[in-house]
Length: 160
Image (cartoon, rainbow, N blue to C red; front, side):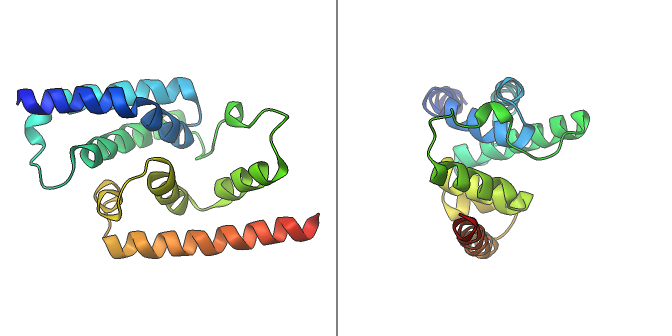
């Protein structure tokens, strides 16, 4: 039990910003994301006996955080979007803006899987655990997202 608590504390220290930034994409603001992450880790500590060790502790906490975020989002009736405060400063390069816009244009599930893989750096198995899907579905979703992103970015290049 103490080992789980220590591991949760270390995970919080090491990955808080990552959790906050990903959850901000889910709930729409950094402020709300901070609350979501705090609640997720508090729940993980309270319910640490429920962690069976079948998957990684981090994936288990991501699943809790995602559930908290989705509940929060439903309560606030917000659309799944990135908050405008995350838009880069005016000195951001066009390709960065284009990539951000393309990621925002992805359907919610694809966007979540992209965030968990490339921003949270979770493995396919961990993403599958968090999202409640198979690893094959994760792989297929990432392939579809990559194809869609390339299409969106190519279309943006043509418009220039």
